[in-house]
Image 1 (cartoon, rainbow, N blue to C red):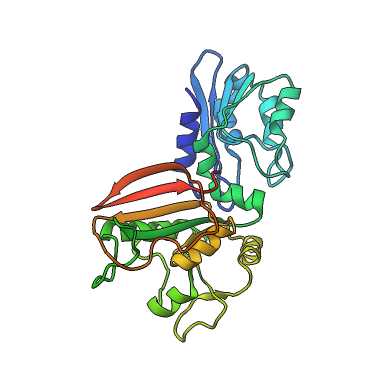
Image 2: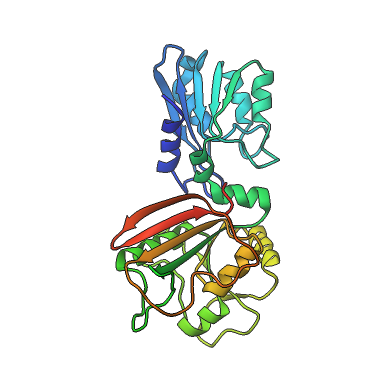
Length: 313
């Protein structure tokens, strides 16, 4: 048994506790038997409490694996760190620290009570709630820039409406359903008249807010929120209004503006098997190179989806 089981539980229950993070927890008895597990409930118990309630008296002397540091404050529930201590748990393996200063401190409280605490600092545990972590720690939404390009790096193909294939476009609708807001720039809004809603997919958090970052007015019939202030200011206002994640679908100019200000956290680039030979590239000119982390690739229909972090969680 390891942190992987707790991570799986959290993934299976993802969005259940939104806007709070979804946490997974597992309790293994002293003899090595799994005796309790659970994930954060919607408006109810935290994962640690769910797992301990299942384990009962068998938790004493055992080990807890949990994806996020047990909270050390009174919120909608009592401190999870206190509940772990009271249950007689001997060892706690934690996937990631809590970035919320109001809730952090569980590690120290557990160690002060004599428990053996191991911090794994698992990237997958941090990435599971990457939007919430950025929202809490940086007071702005987690920003994903999504684009489709040809094999020669162009964002248009002469004579075609779409660069990417049908499966990639379907995945974009799934992405929209998972974020709190979707945005384009003024140029894209005026030329494409985009809807930016999630279509033909389940929307666990409802439809996202639909935005346009632009100084000028939007054309009649474009039903997008106009955000005309400085980008950093607009993101802080959105975060204060509960927007934890933003999917940026604008063109190269808007992408460059966000990247230049350090406001893009992740890139998702669909590369189509076609050569365009002309047109703009992925981003406009940048003041300096931007180093990417954790590059990965996977097939989506005929396309390849490249994912990389600018700011890893």
